[in-house]
Figure 1 (tube, rainbow, N blue to C red):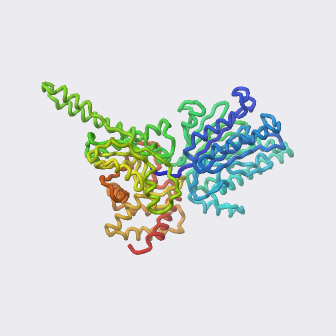
Figure 2: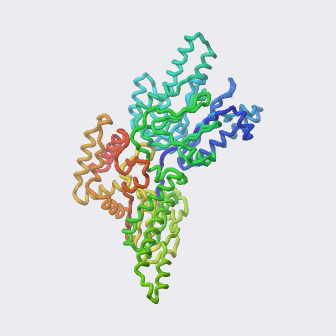
Figure 3: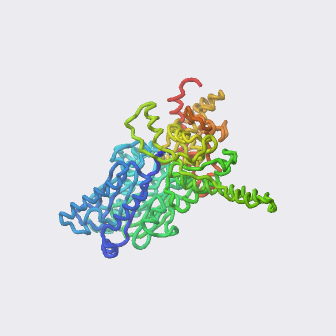
Length: 626
């Protein structure tokens, strides 16, 4: 129900044969260009705020640009950047540029879809970033799906090397770090070939052919604390995609004798390249896929694989649900919630209508329905066993039992896009209440329960301002809102825009419970513990925000959230059912990263920032004694 800004998306393509090959086989020099467009468009879900791409031509003649870049802002950025590229191509065609030398006819492409989670706005912050040079081996392109928790430390490391970063944006800092490493590698190669008596173009040709990408990417990541998939390309045609050691951010790849493709999601590559699921591989955490200037491919362990902290929220909410494993996981999330849902409706299947909202929860809904059908099948079996076959009404009773169905309906429909010309107070809330509409006539007034599943409940704003109000118009006896993930209690610092304590419904509920039970001292003590850690190395910091939740059960917090999110004037009883942490891991066995729910951050920087978030909350909102 809530629009959560989340992880960015990447797309990289490297053609492994001469451009004439693709012209002859596929009828166009724009084979790679077209594939890039599809990869980006099919990952549109990962970037609603901006998009950009670079093309690198290895066959461009001196005197011609060999790197072209397009960037734009907004939800329509993908179409805009490719339309702009087409204009550039058309202008070149009008000037009689040979087809093989047209802008964006290239062997290497780098694409990026952006969600801004660090507050940086404007087209200048849209990836890819460039370091241009007339020396091909010193030009560098960078993009990625990453957020670092220790940008202050990275900035300081640059200053200590004698550099003068122009801004403190993390992408700029990574560009500076990797460009510095690229310069060192160029110098290493230059010294070798100069000592061999080579000069000028001979040296440059040797450098272009013999750069060692591992030397460029092995040291800078030692200063990074965060989740990342970092993509880089050198002007000579070398490229890499490096994944963090915990696998926090996702990366998948495919290659054959014609092409290398890397993207943030597996089914995107399957569809665009028309290949089987087994042909697309997940990049091992800590490893890089490296393609050299000749087009040779290597998967190399750069950083070492550490504890599995692959993002579980990626599977629940972020990635497209057409991935084979993610689809099954989301169904399992809904199915394993069935016992808790049945308890909430007092096992009254006959008088309960099941639905979902929004559309991203549809797959979990299918799983929930499987769970309900399994329960009803067992119930029918038990009732049939009790029947007396000699009873004259046996056939009618059997028919009645077999006719029982789980009642499923499309109850909520997104009706309009909320406009913000009304910006204040109750007028805005009244407008928000009409974002969705409901299907009337399917719920029996004051008799039926209404169960609606969502993929996540984070802030609860839409629930309170819109969803509960419109569902109550149907006059159900009880409304059960189901979340297919556990309570989101802690901020994320690895690519999802959830960074402030007060925005979490679970946190607000815990604070309210502390106040109601005269336990406000827990907040004071937590603040003191967090404050005492300020200035400590991040590796020594403990997440004391967990203490806020420790006095309460999950059920107590869920009950308080329901109470706080229920608007005045609602007639139905409101209950919230969240998945358990254990149940989530049962459904998503291979993605162990759960810091949003557990507070167990995968890197030390997470503990540092969650404590800072609590300090900011306390000093900003609770200065007065509690």
